Amino acid sequence: MPVLWRQTKGDGGERRLFRAAALPLRKVMLMSHNKQGVERVVQGVFLMLGLVTVACVLLITLFMVLSGLPAIGKIGLTDFLLGKEWAPTSAEPSYGILPFILTSIYGTAGAVLLGVPVGFLTAVYLAKAAPRRVRTVMEAAVSLLAGIPSVVYGLVGMLVLVPAIRRVFDVPDGSSLLAAIIVLAIMILPSIIKVSMTALEAVPREYEDASLALGATPTETYFRVSVPAARSGIAAAVVLGVGRAIGEAMAVVMVSGNVANMPSLFQSVRFLTAAVSSEMSYAADGLQREALFSIALVLFLFIMLINGALNFFLKRSKEG
Image (tube, rainbow, N blue to C red; front, side, top):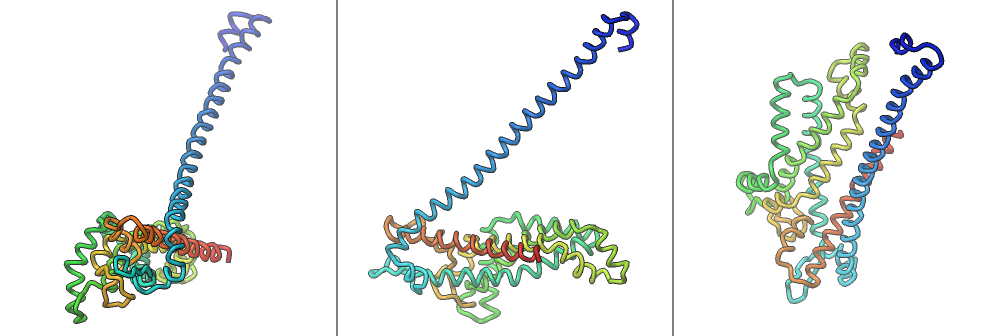
């Protein structure tokens, strides 16, 4: 700019100066316009990906409804949901899934009752009180626990846990609801620990400093300040744990006995997921196969109902 002033004075020089200053302005405007175009493209891509996700959920829901309703219409809703006998290959077939429903409810509830306290307390210790070395080792162990396949959990449970239950409780067969509950409780630990730790670490340090300054002990601060502040994240961890427990199939098939009995702690049982996975491969086309799709529909609605209820109570607690 100063060079133009020295070489040319007057109107011509001023016009040249104006043009020289306007050229970078045009470039800036062009770059800004290009950035806006890129932003629109990126937003459009994200929108499409979100719509694809929603479309997948809707398609799965539509498929489950269309595939599951015909058998319920043929069997009858009451006989299907409240029937106590599942015998699709007998001379007089029966398609009652009440044992599967109750087993899934009891198994999931038992796994949550065992797994949530252990996972929650472990998360509090690792996030707030554990030394760095201990935390590093335990976090690695939790991550490893999360990466173990379901079939490995089932295999270890079948070879170690089932015989132990048979010896300790002196029962004819250790493959039972209790074995399934213990395996599921172990399987949901990584989800609960990881998500709860993230929620606890997100609590502002000022909250804890204020509590300690008022004379509270570290333990009181953790449980009366940090945990209530992180309750939404901890509740999300519980929701993930419930979803993992109720949707598990392979491990429970291997340790529960996979027999269509009414649920009892030391008796072989069958979960909803196990009923679908164990019979779908050999079920003949007809009412039996349609009934398996109906079981899958019940399981799908069951999971949606549990997640919806937990989210509802979580929102109410936030508003309160």
